[in-house]
Length: 223
Image (cartoon, rainbow, N blue to C red; front, side, top):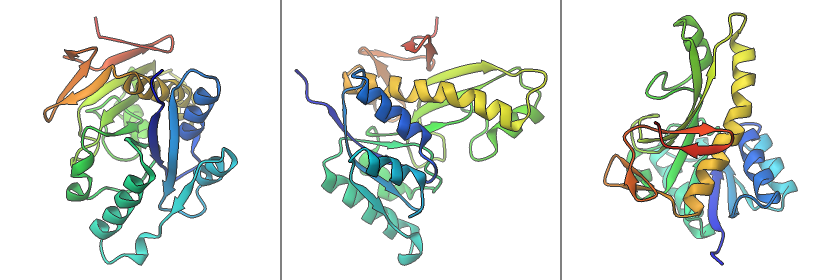
């Protein structure tokens, strides 16, 4: 039997995507071993969730470091010490230093609430509504030095309803995020996903020409 994938999770907020990973693990459907949950905010709800689940936690104050690079180098050193094989950014709101993250390229993923490459950065739901988009969604991508710009692995899509506002759209999408992230992490744990070179996502050994789609809780190549 293959050993569970050792993951570290970075989160700045309440940790709902972390909770989805922990729930999937408890249900027996996700072969992961969380080694660390770290945050840049000592009061982050994600840290409380991790503590309740018996997962080691770490809170570092960015203001205690002379630069963002120094903060990130210390953070990644501690993650490496935890034995993590994969870093999952789950609502982590800091921009990472490109040099500090370079050794983790191909071993770090992020979930972002838009259909990338649309709407990198903040306020994605508002921007989708202002643009009159008929469809919105979430993406999981490999992290590179480019903000929300790494190769996209998979996406979940939802229709934008006529009466949607920023809050309702965000809330409806969140349920799909909570299925998308465990599905991607599960495929990585099973050895089905990887990154070749700088920008080629491999799924079951074949290069993807478009992001995988989340359909009924499972990832499928785009038809």
